[in-house]
Length: 309
Image (tube, rainbow, N blue to C red; front, side, top):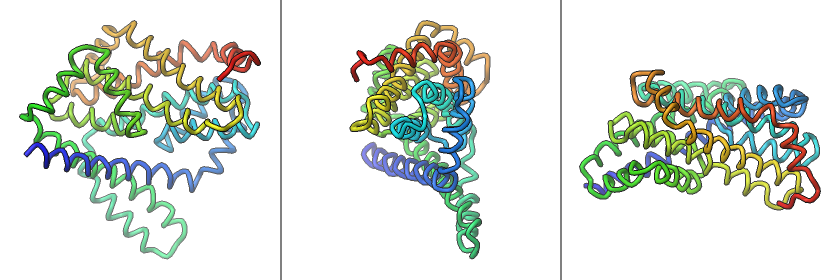
């Protein structure tokens, strides 16, 4: 029954989101203060900021969390807009690590990770319990991804679901729109990427549609930082808008080189999920390579007094 399968997919999506939230928040609670100090100290120039943003996001598994940290540090005048722009670019590339990990078939590790998390939780040692929290989140994330993939697989013959996928695959702009709307609603590009990779694993989506949906999701997730910046200082809001414009520029750049991006993805791997993860990394890296040298003048532009945000 399509309705039951959709309900199952939605429940496993909630489990996936809960696991992602648990993992990133647990890591932020454990190392958040240290990461904030790292962000404020190791961002003297755009290249160092890029490296710091990449490292922090790869470890926290959330570009939105890193970007919100940057916005709050700029709001507190601990970090300049120029420093924050470099970190944001690094965070965009760092978030592709999530897709790389999800593109491998790691579902079999879900229950062992959950079992290990419970075991560590029962040990009366603070350090063991701190490690248990992110492991629990990772296990729930993988369990949710596997369940969501299985539920979506049962929708292969659903006419309604088929039409939705046909809409996304009919033209690049439709795939982009689908990815943007999904990321805005879920407030997580990682969740959208997880869904796309699940569809790819079941052969329900092609490379072109998957790439455009992932690119759209990266733009849609900018809404998190924009919402977080409401009520903050103008410089903090400008940093959030820089995040949006960087993703928009990367999107335009990816579309300009779209055939070459698909070709590079095809040559990079055999399995479709791996191709999608590699395309995600390549287009974000392309945007970073082009924009990172331009960070100082761009930062001066957004800091101009006559720029209203």
